[in-house]
Structures are given as structure tokens and as C-alpha cells.
Image 1 (cartoon, rainbow, N blue to C red):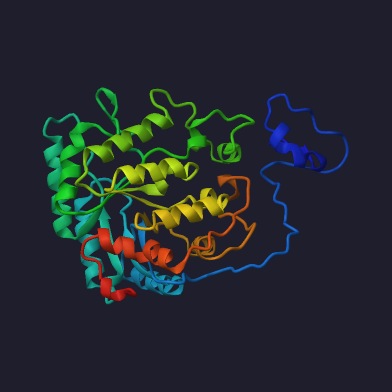
Image 2 (image 1 turned 135 degrees about the vertical axis):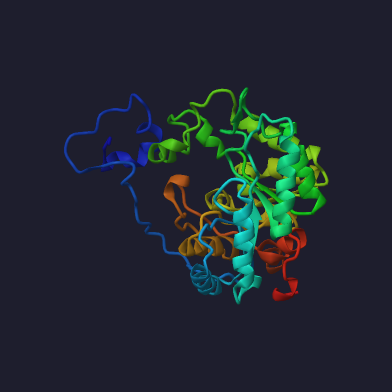
Length: 371
């Protein structure tokens, strides 16, 4: 682990990441960039929220354990957060029986109205000429078993292969699947690519340098055969080719750093929505621009978090509801900066938290949420 003198830390961004950075000056304590965690001396109002202002629908969560005992605990945690309903995406691939079993367990629970489930796509035997029809039929079976959405994982477009190599996001063999989702009016929550910086060289100019240092497995810059731009273009081609299917771009489609491009996409394609999982650091460094974006596109953004963590939800509430300044992100390696609250108005919060989800997911209990 490389270490730097304390005196050198203010200029780390300019020097410490460079390959030819000067050696630390002799004398004095040294720390690594991973250890550097200064405590702010800024004194500003703080509103550390632990409960959302309005009940919300979580559209992007992952729980394999949906036993009655776990559901009991989840209900207690959801009540504390003011989570009105959780839409769970299974951690698996094409597990039709899992969907049926999970839906049955949830339905049998006294608080069954608080849970719904998505399914995954069957990705077996991709070279089979009849693959598309088979995968679409499995999706229809899962819908009849209780699935209200289709979750597509990030390996789709990145690591998914057939006998000829990488399969593109807009590969036409999957068209029957998207058409089936459109037929039954269930949304497709699709994760494509990862943040742009993870596909760039790990050098002094990369603001995701610390994440690449700590999470080496996330480094995509050494990948061959595709770029971030190619993946995103393929995703947008898919959206445009299936206007009768509702798509939800997970993680704001990894366009949180370019809300202008995301806004243009939403303006061009009315079948596309976006959710805000794992992008608080992107929104929190541009509070005025993000506020304007949420107000303008208030009918098209959904609340999702991805990895379930009660304390991390608190950061989301603070980011969305308050005008707090300069507070800590969920993970510092998502960006070496602090967050600023968006202070969204109540009518926008209601749409983000539950109204938009009620509109695009079938069969949700609208009566359980404020009108």
C-alpha cells in the first residue's frame, strides 16, 4: 500500500495518482489515500432522516430468503422506513419455480399486500433456434405465477455469450421476450453496463480512481470487444425498437453524470423510465441540476435502491427531501466528494416514491397509498 505524507494530501488529486509522483518527504506521519477520511469542520444545519416523508414503493431490491420469518422481520424494517411495498427481484437466472414459490409464500403472509416479485429471463441454450419462443413462454408462465416485472442483470451485454461470442443488448433473438412483457404490460427493469469511469484508464484523471483501487474487480477498462458507449447505444436501440414495452433503466441508465443525455432519452422515448439505485453520489454533487431534472421528468423516475440496507436508505431520504449541505456519501469510493440535498417538492416526491410505480406495475394496491 503506497503511503503519502499528511502535508501532501491537499494536492493528491494532482500528484498522488500519477505514476511519476514524487517520493514522500522525510519525517512526519504518513497515511494512504484509502485511510484518508477527514472530518469536516463545517457547521451547517443537519436533518438526518430515518423515515421517508411519504410511503414509498421499492422497485429494485434483491432477497432470496423470503421465508415467513424473514418476511416478518422485513415488515418491521419497512414500517420503520415508511416503505409501503417492496418489489423483489430474485438473485438467480430464469428460476420459474422460485417465482411461483416466492409468490405463494408472500401471498400466504398476513402482510402479503406489502410484497411483489419480479422474475428473471431464461438464458440457457442460447444457440437454440427456438430460444426466443421458449424464453417468452417461460416469462408468461412466471407472470401467471405472480411476477409483475422482468429483471435483466448487468451480465446481459457484458458477459453473456453464445458460441460466437458476446451477445449484444439489442440482439433480436430476445425480441419475443420483450414483446411478451409488452403484451402483459409488465415493466422490464434492465441493468446495462456500469459507471462510465469504470471503463476508463485508471490514471490521475479518473474520478473513480479510488473505486478502481479498492474494487479491482470493477475495472472494465481492460475489457476488449466493447466500450461503455457501445453498451449504452445498444440499450437505447432496444428501447426504441420496442415502443409497446415499458423499460426501466436501472441506476438512471448510468447517465447520472449526464442528466442532459438522460433527459433527451426520456423526451424521445415515452416507454422508458429510470430508477435511482446506487447513484446518490452522482445526484448529490449537482443538487440544482438534479432538482431541475426531477421536476421536469417527475412522471418518469422511480425509487429503487438495489442492495438492501436500512441505514443506507436514510441517505436517500436526506438527499431527496432536505437541502442539507456537504454530508457524507454512502460509500466514499463512489466519488471523492460530499453530497448536497435536492429538496424536492412534495408533489415530485410522491410521484418518485409511489405514484409512478403504481401507474406502470400491474396490480399494485393503490388504495394503500395517499391519493
